[in-house]
Length: 72
Image (tube, rainbow, N blue to C red; front, side, top):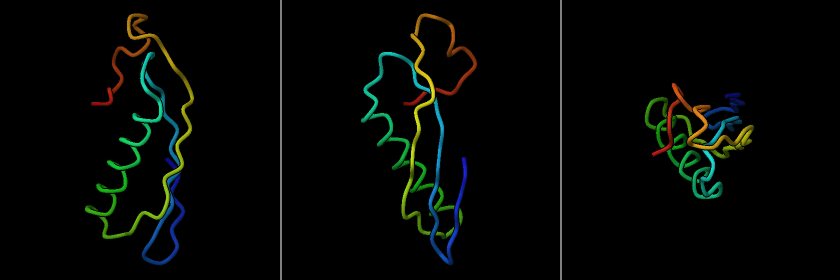
């Protein structure tokens, strides 16, 4: 994750992977909302924007996701 801060606000840039099939728009909105809420709660810094790049998709059954955190 990259953070660009300007005063009391910031922009986040995140790269992540998702299990396939996952509804990408729904999953990235969940990540965006969770990150914004938690960063603001923990730091008091307003998150103005969260840019998300989905870097990989892997089938659930492939074992490629073993040991990785799952979106809930």
